[in-house]
Each structure stands twice: as structure tokens, then as C-alpha cells.
Image 1 (spheres, rainbow, N blue to C red):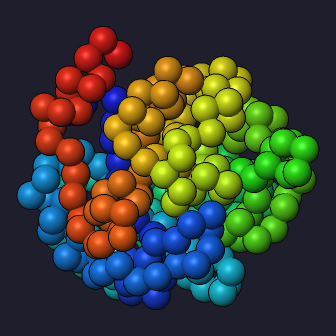
Image 2: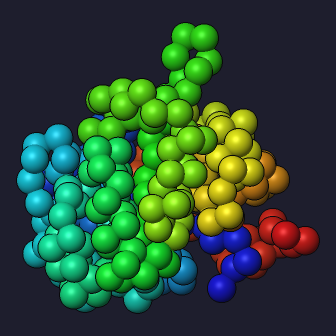
Length: 254
């Protein structure tokens, strides 16, 4: 296991994998089961699957698909999307999913985080924060796959989520997601400094140097999508992952 986790973050829409930019313009990039099989061969330590339309459409997770993923995956994986009750989360764990990622439901009522962490343990409960800056640079947490401004300040919300029992935070910059311009390191630094639970940086990774910038800012782990799915300036679909030795050398000293 690497000291710093490097996590492919895969977006689901219906039963397919998609990728977009700034939470929009999503296009189909492949079958999730095939992606899992490829990541198995790459010896990836951990995966994240996010259903980007479940909350918007008011539907439950696709448990049949998740069962198929669980039967194929050699590595632990986390899932988020449409989780709005303890029953949903318990059903997820019964399938073999290691972590439940809660986003929209948590912004509406953090009691779901409290209840879930009391039942499953905080190490299994992750709160995802999708953050967007306004024209003057002020950050707000968004829900509903980036559609709804909750008005919540990311740092304040991070503290609230931690106090409610979240064992980890995934902090995604909507403005940088899919751009390859690097993480919002200022946001990562402020959130990481405010909490004493792991923070996963997400949104904007374009090359391996961006991983180091996020870790320098305080992230405990880094997540990426485009970097592991697209190849070249024309963004041909090529699911890949850096060699273990490359990542080990990259994080040497951390």
C-alpha cells in the first residue's frame, strides 16, 4: 500500500461510465465492469464510484450493478449517489462496498452521518463536498451534482461533518473538475487545516505533479478521473494507472 492513496474516481450514469468537465458535458467512456478488470491488473489499491444522477433523479443506487462490481473488484471500493437513508447504506455494505459516500443528503441533514457512523463506524462513512467559487472567489458547497448552492462555507461544513462522525472528506473543486489545471490547493489547505480526519483532494488533476501539490497542501489522498481515463490532447479513452514504483518514487519523503 502506498503511503498516499491515489484513487481513480469513476462517474456512473445509468449503467455506464461517463466523464465531463466542471460537472457538465458528460460523455460515455466505457463499461464499469471492464474498467474494474483493467484496474485489477494495474493493482490499484482503492476505487471510488459516484452515480452522478441518482440524487437528481430521486432514485436509489443501482444495487445490481454494485453487486456486479463487488464480485469483480480485487480492491476495496467506495460508492456515492442516492444514499439518503440508513437502509440504503446498510444495503450497500451487505454487497461488499467498503465505504459509503454521502453528499446531498448530508447537506440537508447531518443526522444521516451520525446514524451511519454509529452503526458502521466512522471509518466507513465519507462526506463528499462539491465546492464552487463565485465571481469574487468566495467558496460555497453545492449539492445535487453541483446544481444547488447550499450556502454552506466549506471549512465550516467540513468541521460539522467531522463532528457528526464522518471519517473522511472528499473535497472536489467544481471549477477545476475535468480541466487538468490542478487541484484547488487553497481550498484543500483550508479544509485540511480545519479537520483532523483524512481529506481526499479531487477535481483538476492533470499530471502527477498535481498530486504532490495537493499533498503539500494537506491532503491525505488524491483522486482523479481524466488522468486515468483519457490519453493525449484529443482525449482518446485509455484506462490506465501509473506503475506502483512511479508513485512510490513520487511520494518518497511523504
